[in-house]
Amino acid sequence: MSAHRDQALLKDVREVIEDRVPAAAGLPLHMRGGVAHIGGQVADRETLHRLRRVVARVRGVHAVWAVMQVQDEPSLRILDVGCGAHKQIESAIGIDRHPHPGVDVVADLERVVPLADRSVDHVFAVHFLEHVHNLLPLLNELHRVLRPQGVLHVMVPHHAHVNALADPTHVRFFHPQTFKFFCRPSPGLRIFYPLGISASEDNIYADLQPVGEHQAPPGEEDLARFFD
Image 1 (cartoon, rainbow, N blue to C red):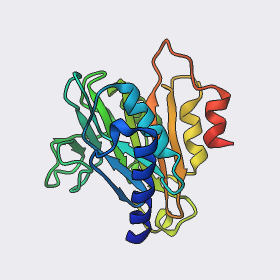
Image 2 (tube, rainbow, N blue to C red; image 1 turned 45 degrees about the vertical axis):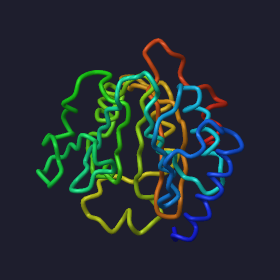
Image 3 (cartoon, rainbow, N blue to C red; image 1 turned 30 degrees about the vertical axis):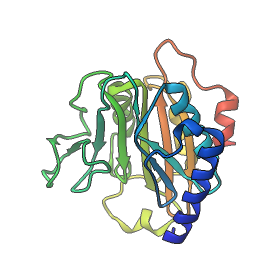
Image 4 (cartoon, rainbow, N blue to C red; image 1 turned 180 degrees about the horizontal axis):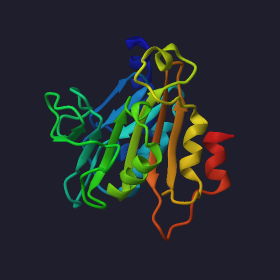
């Protein structure tokens, strides 16, 4: 995606925020590859939810990475799994099996995520899940460490693009429908709610929120919005 297209999207997103969520106008915002990066602070969670919804509906926006502090809530804790040498957010806890510069915790994520239950607000898994053999256990672990209002941000290669095939270390392929599996009840699987599922020519994007043990799973209308 060109820088020119990102600039056009940025203008559209700013206009929508000013019109639909004026309380969030002026927050730090930039677009990169069709992903809306939003920072700063909002007064309450309702403003955050509304902001995320209206930005996600702008045509051309593939994902909304709204890493925002809610007033009077504890400081954000962010995790970047399989980060390599480049974390998505500098303040994130970077976990990788290799001790690259900037990696904070060296661990084999095929086994366990070495963090406490409900201890992080955002998890970034960017061009990482395609390298994971034990995908279902890892998704369960990421669900476990996320707080109830937390978000898992996923970016993986689109199965139909050459990038999915060109790297021999990739062990699986992804389609947008792949993420429907994680949003429906299945034995031994923790459920996510789809905040956003999208695809470009080269990537698939998924923003997922953990569904609690005593919460209802996403309904058919929730799933149909992204998967039908």
